[in-house]
Length: 436
Image 1 (tube, rainbow, N blue to C red):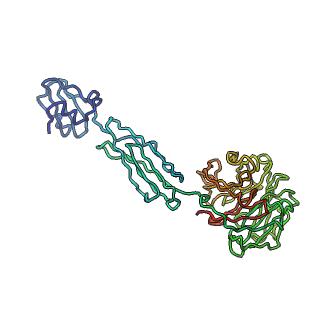
Image 2 (cartoon, rainbow, N blue to C red):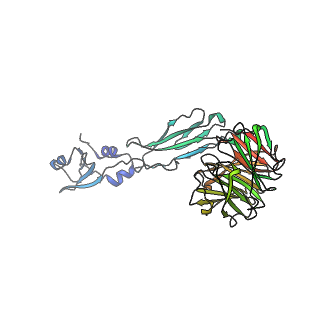
Image 3 (tube, rainbow, N blue to C red):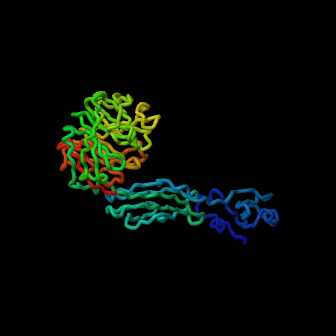
């Protein structure tokens, strides 16, 4: 349908003065503006005067007649808003109730006002969190109730009202530290008859055997548990293995995933020593295989050794200042092939004194450290599993001082519902229940 004047055409193209000044030629008195279906209709036009304009719907272009012919003035466009920025793909909500505030950013190329919205697209808010919005600012406030832990995603959207919707999605997780629900089980087990300075602690994968290494006798001691991971059912089975030929100060003991290899870290030579077991997790069958790796360049007082599940990463804990060092193993679980990654993580902000034990959770996204200044366990998050360069302190800790003022090692059961702390005070292992 023909448009009778330039003002109506400007309204069609948009109310922005910028558009009118850039793309719409002023209409002289007596000139006209037409809306035409296609270029054939433009060519067929007759009776034009200088200054006449025509908008061709076929190609969305505006033309001006200069007295001798039609000339292109502009292509009429209304682009959609720009891609949303300021929105991350994933957020971990603070379990202390601190809100996460997201300021989404987008611009409309033509300057039209934008309308923002959001929608929960996977999962459910339920009682996990609430969401409020002021224009492009979204506030996600999490619950502080451990029963409301959960995960959901939100899609943030923006539109200029005419060119469609631009969106960005984020995943939100509310998780609570297992330490926030920790409590002492009033269960402990004495290892004083085996060693007066117990330093290292670990279990076999099924929780039916426990192992302690001490530096009085420089031996690894083996215990049976008739109920898996239940210290109240523990008993010494009179099996031990001496490492005194390698060291006079043994500080930790660990196994590979199958129990066919045992490792002892020691202070005398600052090395990790490797032993073969002909029967898995049975230390009476252990034999030193003359494989060792020196950590002296990083740790002059190594107190703990741990591995990632595939045995390609090894971690050594320096006692003081508390620092964890990361190594790569070219052959899984063979410390003879280890090399330092030039990656470390300092615990001194939480533990200015002695740090004795470190343990990862089952997927490597959480790390737990025990120290003796405050006799506490501290929790850390790793944004990349088992990469300690991505570790950050979670501001969560749990005191074990009421049971032992000098903790020397930490261990967990298979499903992370139980925690065990070895203490030099009293020479006992203490059992705790923790959140899942």
